[in-house]
Image (cartoon, rainbow, N blue to C red; front, side, top):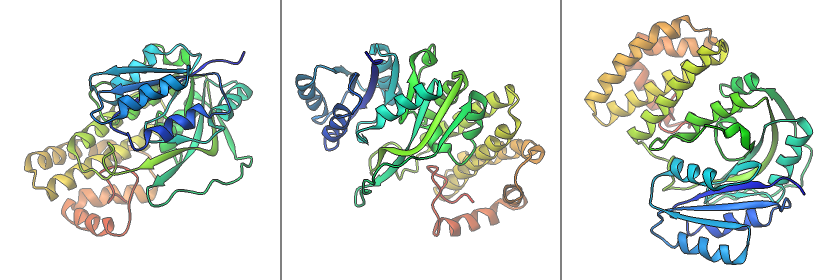
Length: 334
């Protein structure tokens, strides 16, 4: 018998999307699944939907709990799971029929501890057409090479917790941080480091829904931004401790971007105390950035900020009108 895969789905007030999500897992071509639905204190009909699906499919286990946030829901699912592999999916997203099968076979073929797929960003008004499967490019990384990708073009694909098939042993003593947003940023780098090998396919096997009301979509929230900053600073310290200098320097620049994003939002919303705190912390970061080996464009950008934060913020507001960066709260960062 093939290995059991535990699919952990945190559920909170996603009644409009949840049936599609659950059915996409039930209909996987890889059938040896344990589907754990963690109802995190939903106030809509999401909990009842979970219970209805449990009656339809013996592979489904439902856990109802008081609302504790996404990290706590995922941790609850991890503790309740018994599969040899773990896979995370959010309750408003869904999977290609062959998602888990392809990730499982990729993991077995490459001898990896983690296999990762690519994803579609799905906007309500624009659902991507499903294209015939073709052989997409596959990358194989050591744990250190995978960590370097966190500061590269595959940043989001490598950072998010969903879309990854993870050997259970990799999760020993690793949990998502309760009470923190950007919980993936705090966690996945630890998993990548513990993996002996990581395989990445560019096949888009997961559909990531973009919707108003989700945790990260379209919000300007200081809690979100400060947690993101803390996660980046934590990862930067870790990368420095294991002597991944290039990734460390790139992560320092990400810290700079996040700080400037907070500074700009604080100036815009007239949060003077936060703005002053960021100004001081940015000055403390300056010598580290000056010593970092960064591409010329990034060197110019950060030096421009330190030459005149006021001019930089004016340029940032102009840039914000014509471009959108993927990082929440930092859409104006070059």
